[in-house]
Amino acid sequence: MLRKEYDHIILLAHGSPDPLWKEPFESLYHQVSQTYGENNVSLAYMELTAPSLEDVVAKLNKDVRNLAVLPLFLAIGRHLRHDVPAQIESLQSDELQIELLPPIGDDVLVKQAMQTVVANHLGKV
Image (cartoon, rainbow, N blue to C red; front, side, top):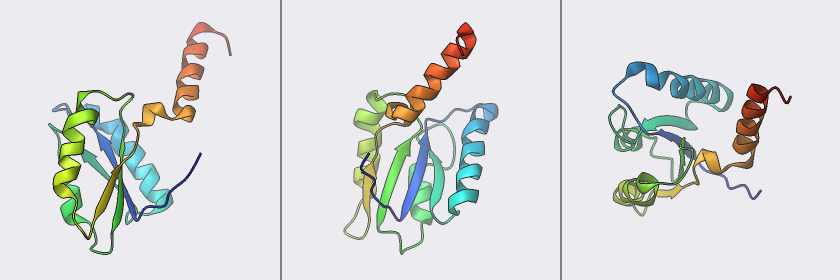
């Protein structure tokens, strides 16, 4: 897999008005930020929950020039085809380049983890 370096990565979850829904995403964010530093990663929500992508980008250090948005989605749907690219386009500037990465569900490691979970439930592991 080709790796590219970014100044900062925003983990982007969908959002929900239910506060319990946010817990797994906040837990992931805290684990990642402890490992890689709070200056290198943020958590944002596409809708229904704060902080928004716009909120997070507004608070970024001015040294951040090359930003990636990693959707914590299982697949590409309307939001990742239309809504999120429109949000990103409105936030980009000559000083800030933003790349939308494939959703986390497209990653081979995530697919393997899901297969393992299914196998565990089937008693095959």
